[in-house]
Length: 193
Image (cartoon, rainbow, N blue to C red; front, top):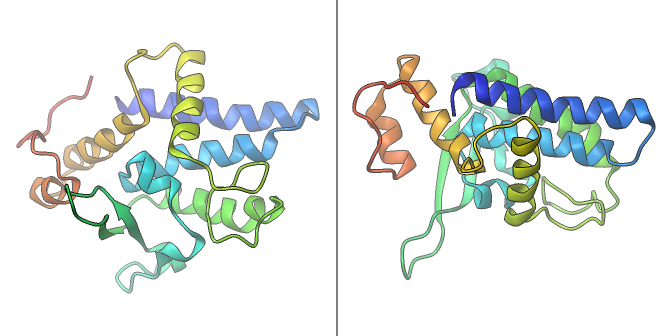
């Protein structure tokens, strides 16, 4: 996804929150959660399952980025597993301050309003259970279709865009090639599309 497509997706997801609030309809909390989920997938380069399995205790301070507070790094406990192995754990440093702000705002102001906020899951449904991977994929598809993006785009495209955009901005490609476990990453920045 291009930067413009990512921004269009985020803007549309944010507009759904405003629409629900303006109309006095149910769904504002869920719309806010969904917008924050998309920003989290992109902001930390996560897979859907990694994002859906996040818990409130998975964020940590990063001494090299004190301005990000307790959201300076993210401990991914349920990364992609190899055949016959448990899920791979890894840490992801926070590099997008706006994504940190979105998660922090959700965690402090929206998540406590859910029925089962005593649960450790970061992303809760209206019924208080953990948001599942399929839920994220369905909500992404609805937003994608509403703004006319290519039907082949999935939430995983946000993960690829995260890596591509960081490399375009001058990040070291080798650190992302090993972390993302994607052998087909370009060796030089390329234009997404």
